[in-house]
Length: 115
Length: 112
Image 1: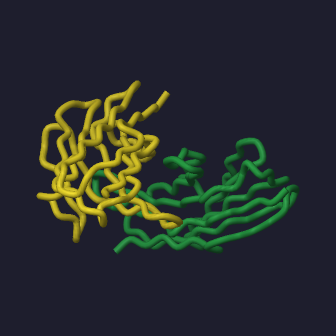
Image 2: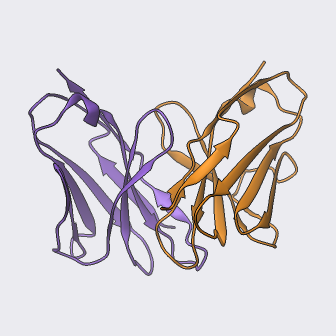
């Protein structure tokens, strides 16, 4: 149980384009989903928290207009990187949490490369 | 502000060695501490600790929480090359939406 999927696993795009990443909880209802960014050999940096049906809460320094998050259902959250630039290249990971449980389960991550 | 510190930041051992990874925390309204293992993809859940002094064990991995010292250790015995990974410690924040504060991670490299 507690499987989280992410799609795509890898994406290469041109500078200026937008990229959408999907995060799905496959066998549980995720009341809260989290989006992280990770640079090589570094820990995870939380970007935003999304609760189903409400606006995402962004961490300080994360541009909400650049990283659009939608959590339309209890099993799906999407992160759209708008007008991507090379500095947005990173490993993006989502996690999901069921109800008030403490444990977060992570998706396999999406490697984004912006040329 | 919640804070999680891991040590060492990196560790290189040979197969068969035993390693101990440390995690200390400062957090308001502590409820639990989580350990994750991250290889090439996203972190996989190892343990959740809520009670002090009770060891959790899974194969060669074990972990224990010390609420008095505000810390936890993760032990790996008889290490194998497949144990090479980043080990992350995380603590849920004091707010209701359960944001995790992560430590910097310990990069473990096990040589054959």
